Length: 306
Image (cartoon, rainbow, N blue to C red; front, side, top):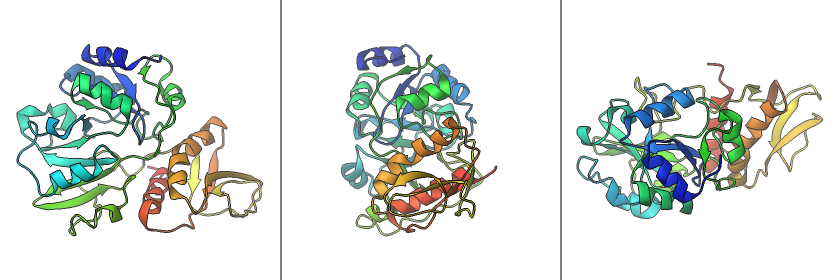
């Protein structure tokens, strides 16, 4: 069911869930301080309650009443990258952020999305939680059709067309005076080198500190192999400049434009299931730097069996 921005704001303020577009992927939104609405997101997505949510705001000033102190470089990062595909995990004032939003952690994740429709809605509703609009573990939704495939026609949707970036935000975690990349995303690590030199690489922790860090994630039903096949009948995910022995090639895009590959990635994975393809082989011969590093990480997670 498609709704206008005004209708979406009213529905959210009444405790409903609404799927909203961002520049990265679509999200299922709820008022961050509405306990029942937030719990309904977990139920709808079949998402574990131990997986914290990202709080989306329309202005950086909205987060200051919720966080503890002013972490180093916070204003610098906000000025440079917000609105945009960056999420910051910050220490919070416990009573200011509901426990079900932050999985009872002493931190919470924040972002200002770069989409005019969602920014307009946020300006009317105040902070919203907005995890990706997909069933937990499946490829994220980058257009309204993906949402309808997962949830039918009962969920209200604000139509923003296809998302521009097609891959989730990069997540930075502030801890003990240092920033750590917890989730690779649309902003590569090189984007932060001019602002601080102590960004660390992702690491596994016992507790889930941010979305998208479960080992198996972004996964179609099809079995994915991170190598090229020897049989000509196998399905291959590859690049338009290259030739493959297979007769069934699905092109991710050009080997020269990682932004296009990232934008196409989840749609390509979802198409495998739409076309009832049971397994596919992926050409992984691409760089290990920049946005390619994020694409590689997504494909590795999508290929895991557990």
